Length: 328
Image (tube, rainbow, N blue to C red; front, side):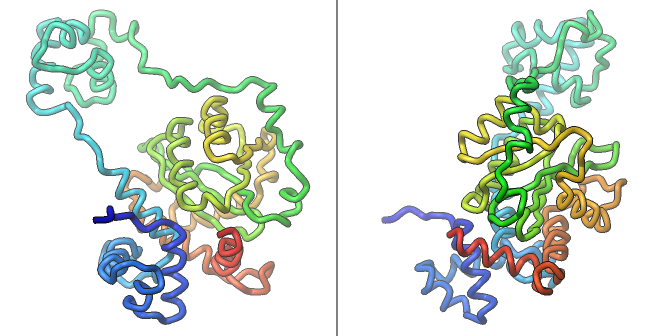
């Protein structure tokens, strides 16, 4: 019996197109060679309006892919910080045991020293860092293996080395990247992407503004738009300047990464403008931790659905889908 295969971005784009043509679910299932139940389940689970029962927007292939990726990413193992572990660790911390003594001498806990320190620093364990023997000064949270690039790396990847077809916006598949921050109460932010030729705009939520999180976001982004990505251009933000992280992205996806000059936001003007438009939906005091993927994708679709003078009053979505169809 053949194994089940999840719908991919190409199939989701086709579903969107077939729906726009007025095809029924049965007709779509025949064209894709998929069961009718697969199509029905896809439309129920991955439409932006399906999350709250309100008719907000029609099915959009790339948004559906992102929702599916988010749902898949949430599947994982549960934390080891059970009520039992929490009580046991707190009891022994009050008995003046160090986190290392608890991790190595208390087999019932079964977690590492670093894990206990992390729980204390995050406030998951009810115990002050200042009450530890060395006030936590000898411990440093685990540092990423990624390292910042040197000036030579930046120079090699400078926007000055970007080909003319990217500068002129004549070739499809070149993106600008930036981040939109939450309020000060939250570490969450949005990684925003805009395709330079069509001005198609996209956003993905990140838990923290760092290179490791951006590397994960790029995996999601590439699973959505892989065949439509040839390069990205970013600034010198901490999330973008990790030499090993950027190198792994370039190698994994065979794309080029370019850096705009420092303090030159006009070199990523399209991205800056659309981030400003996004702020109309999510003001600066927004906590993105409390903002759902449905809300983000709905705002993005609203922006992309607006008619543009540069596209002879066609929408960005219209232009992007035409270019995307050529890419496939």
